[in-house]
Amino acid sequence: MMFKKRLFLFILFSFFHAFSLFATPRRIICLAPSITEIVYALGAGRRVVGVSNFSNYPPAATKKTKIGPFTTPNLEAIIALRPDLVIGLKGANPAWVFKRLKKLNIQVLLLKNGGIDTIWENILCVGKALDKEVRAKDLVKKLQEEINTLTQRIKNLPKPKVFFQLSLRPLFTCGRPSYLHDLIVLAGGINIAGDVNIPYSIVSLEKVVANAPQVIILCLRQEDVKQALKFWKRFPKIPAVKEHRLYAVNPDLFARPSPRIVRALEVLINLLHFDAPDKKDRFGDKLLLPFLQYNIFQCV
Image 1 (tube, rainbow, N blue to C red):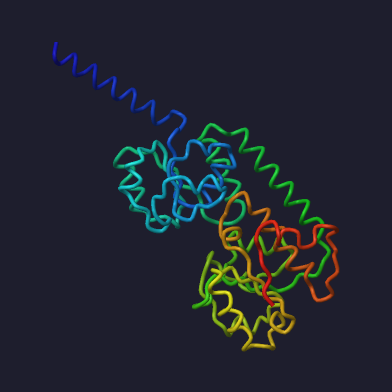
Image 2 (cartoon, rainbow, N blue to C red):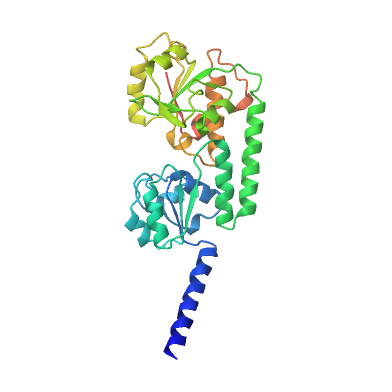
């Protein structure tokens, strides 16, 4: 009799555990700001119980419990929130965290980290996991249509050479496999590090000078921008420096592979084409609007 009772309880526990693995997640932890933005864009923000430290968009995300930086998440804090799904970013979050979570039978969803197409894949993947497939498909379609509209308007414009700076020292930039490279290309620019076959890497000062970028984008912390401008003024022969075309952009908008990539593209298009020395507005009434709307600031 006792054996049958134990067997029944074991089967019952196994059933509920299996059911929980396939049930729609209700307690979600997002291990990167871009993941937080995707989950909220799909209308599942109320299910989020924990986010990485710098998850500040949308504003509602700032009220969620913080589980540490995305590079060093706090495992104890994650477990304490009793999540039924933890969503991470491959290559950004430490692999050991996912191994520990799986050992604890906590469901893990790992998203890709790559070009702009992986953003669409990640949105669809999260949509499937959260039972938001229709909304995810509609969102991807809408974003792709917006990108197509933007790129059609600039397809016949000259393509300036661009250096996209991601750190003060050493000089760090984006290579061909990154979504930032795709963003530069979509915005009608030429990435001077487009021949680099890794997503992000150190680039030599000699290479930057030799490639003579016409635009330099500073995707840096605000406190590093002044130092960067001071540094580049030492090289007045670089076209971007000569023409005062160094721009600081908001890393929260550009350094996240999220649905807001379209807004980043709109800003970059304005910087590359409509703030050229002739100052002509070739984009109708859209000129410089995103600077005000998304807290982007220009540095000359």
